[in-house]
Image 1 (cartoon, rainbow over the protein chains, first blue to last red):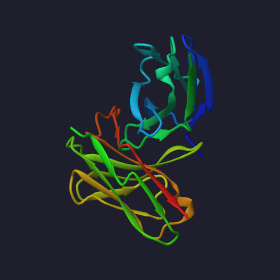
Image 2 (cartoon, helix red, strand yellow):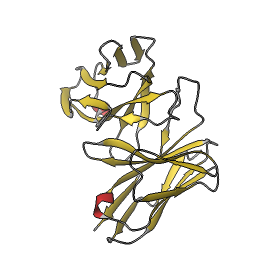
Image 3 (cartoon, rainbow over the protein chains, first blue to last red):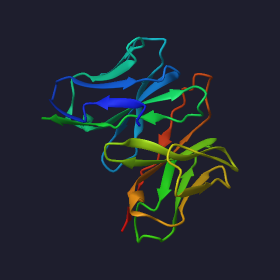
Length: 113
Length: 117
């Protein structure tokens, strides 16, 4: 049973639009929430990450929103570009679990021109 | 720096055959990991290593063995391949455990696509 639930499975957004991907978790011991981006035929690469002591983190067009009480976090991609077309994975980790990330199932994002 | 490399890129096995996947990293990372990626399942941890000569089980270790004889290499072995092991395998590495609240970045290799017939 996946400890991190991710939705939607896929989404299509027009160029310039906003992509939103949501993740939920149950384990309150999780203290690190990274998002990974994966292009076809490549390995995942860290995109942005957040810790639960902040509610939002922004890096360029990518923003993580974190709701500790709801045990949810989301990735917003502003001004989506065709080059953002990829699969996005949320993940969570406990500080005492030696870097053993728990991944969501992934969201395939397609940005149309 | 090549980062994390994996060998081979593709492989087709018959049920019962054995093989070894090789992962190498040139970043002097202490921690290394093997994941499998299946549609709709995300990435699941198979085995990991926190240093040369040490290995431990992850979430889905059955049917796999690993060895970390050198700090830069992490090998994943399938002794008797089964169709259920058809997957894409990713190796990753990270510098250390990080702080108590664990903010390490894991660096992934390009993957090995394995098909077991």
